[in-house]
Image 1 (cartoon, one colour):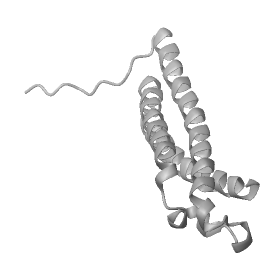
Image 2 (image 1 turned 120 degrees about the vertical axis):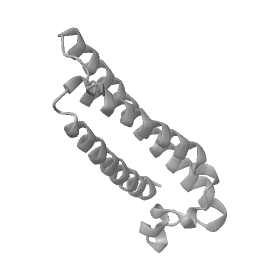
Image 3 (image 1 turned 180 degrees about the vertical axis):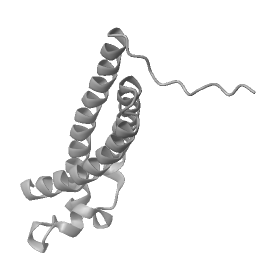
Length: 132
């Protein structure tokens, strides 16, 4: 069970890392307006948390043989066929849920930081109006 959990954390963690990289790129794109950078980061991180919660809810119904974790498990670490869906579903629900909690905390932090920056007088980005 510990081997399954370790591999699940690696697989989900890698996916979250790539998502965080994409969110970081969007935030760097808004670096000229820090309030907008942190606000966009918060919204995208919140979206990632929602996806992780959805994946946690759907983990129990997924066929374990069609998961990345199953591919990384060696033959002796794989649970028996009758028991595999329950074990992998339980572990994946827990791992997705834990990453969703962490991601939600980061999103709240980004929102709070954008509010603090607004309290210090910084304004969010507003595109120039198109008059003509």
